Length: 436
Image (cartoon, rainbow, N blue to C red; front, side, top):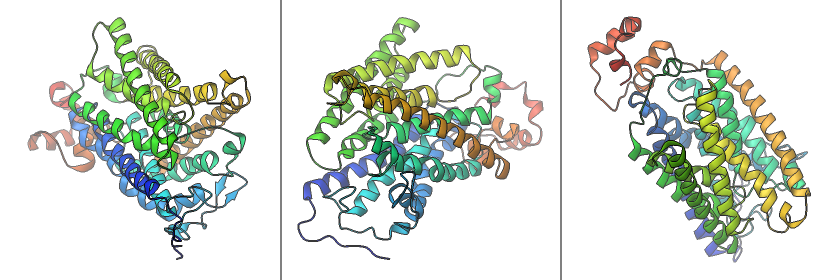
């Protein structure tokens, strides 16, 4: 394998230092997501939910090294997909910069940074089918989604010859590639897997571990500075702008969510503050380096209000069981951010008198949503037929921590466990045991 070395004076030390830091910041977002999601599920599903995020750091790392990076950034085939042999197993990826992608940092560092985006994207989807997905089925779907959905979208949007990039579609840090794709795949996942038994019974459930959610939000917000500001690919003015826009949008979204929660529900909640902050982070992602500070605040507020209304409508008017509201928050947050990027982007946005960029954003949105939903639906069906996706009813009632991993964060009576595995029906009259 060839690993080109950097020529003297070809690297910028400040850029290298910042991108190493940003890469580490993006990595910490995935454990942060595991706490964010893990704090929202029933105690009997905490470990399984957290592991579904955590395991992506292993599986997707190896997959992206072998072929994913080449599919996303290899020699372009008609702007649709990269040649899987161009950078297979990091062939031709060394410490020398690749000017087509980042001219002042090692190409292998560019790989490492993009890898972290590939890691967190399938992890985001897991919130939609939490508490009922079979672990081996999830692993299979995660691999298929990364190869057939994520890598093509990354190529379309971020490769210099990708057709969306050629159209002038702007996605600074992954609103389209990461959040819209994850949100739409989550919608497909919730529909394919169907409703949880507790959702059908309309069992009441209060969030068991709000401190976990708050910890996860803090880690996500902290890591998001690497996610967005790192997408400048250097220590420069755009990194500083996107850094500030990231926290402004998130702070504004947090306030907006708490205000509307207070108006509609009577009291602000810590959970609502956390969700609002994350929605703002999602929405500013595609626009972070392209808009001014006032625009970022507007994007945060609007995305928060729309996601709040969508969550309320989903819970009160539909039977969709998107467990942790991935589509209303990540999917719609990404969509709002993408469209508003076309409105506010410096020099080319709708407010500057040009409709071209906004028009291409609308067209790109239709293409990405259709491709991701249909593609994810097909991949989910294939996975279900080969590996199985939905756990058995008895395993769902017992909890995925025990049924999938034989681990638990709380005490389970061994006699109860053995009896429940044999005949769960006889325990229908024991909701306090089932809901632990």
